[in-house]
Image (tube, rainbow, N blue to C red; front, side):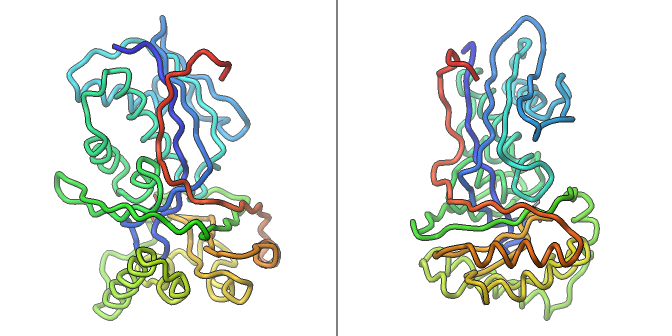
Amino acid sequence: MKQGVQVIVPGSTANLGPGFDTVGMAFELYTKIRMEVSDEPKVVLYGDDLKGLPTDRSNLVYKMAEYLFEKAGLTLPPLRIQMRSDIPLTRGLGSSAAAIVGGLVAANYLAEEPFSKDEIFQMASHIEGHPDNVGASLFGGIVVAVMEEEKVPYIKIEPKSSLKALAVIPDFMLSTEKARGVLPEKYSRKDTVFTLSHAGLLIASLASGRYDMLNTAMQDRVHQPYRTALVPGMGTLLDKAHEYGALGTALSGAGPTIISFLEGNDERLKQFFVDTLLQNGIGSTTMSLMPDLHGARISEDIDTPF
Ligand code: HSE
């Protein structure tokens, strides 16, 4: 068994409008995890962003290590886990997916890699309940995946180097549970066909680099209309962002972050985002994001200070 490893995992956006629980895209925004065999279990968290998370075995990353070792039929030794992250928590940028992927990838390395990357993806998707964020975090780029009983077939698409994103992160947290709780059990045929056809166009647009189609392709009637009430100003941002240079705009994952894709300068869009949320009584910060193309990566360097 290996004695230590460091893993860097990108955050992600999910859904991109109509690709609900199916499409994810990774960004150069990272969670860093160092996992070492130790005398007693301990989780050390760095930075304000992780404040409040558990520092014992109930930490999600620790739980992932326990899960993977159990699946492999191995006994987990006590671990010292160090963690820092640039991914804002509970905002729709895949912080928990990054923790799940990071914990599994690091533990798999310590266990001498009993599982393939595809098997890690299946585990992560079943733990998270959907493959969109975990797929992007694990593989990088844009990942389109479907959950089947056992397998999670996927295809990775590399975005063109011109594609970037602007995220506006409202100053409040929104749990995925709450944002999924407002979704209906059933949909009309009209809304189903509307969303299916737009999801098809979305993937064709991303795969072919026809980003001029994104504004049309990112329309959906499966989740965003029901989540609008949870994010004051969201309706205006989705309707009007293209007037400020956005190629397409969506609620990022379960929100509350809103994300636009663009190829040019994002200054006008930034101002529009911040002003619109402020008019709705919500403070926010913006992040200009570049796609991450590599996904989770392992480093054996556990000697340099964390
Ligand atoms: N596809 C998920 C959702 C992403 O929109 O609920 C959040 O985890």
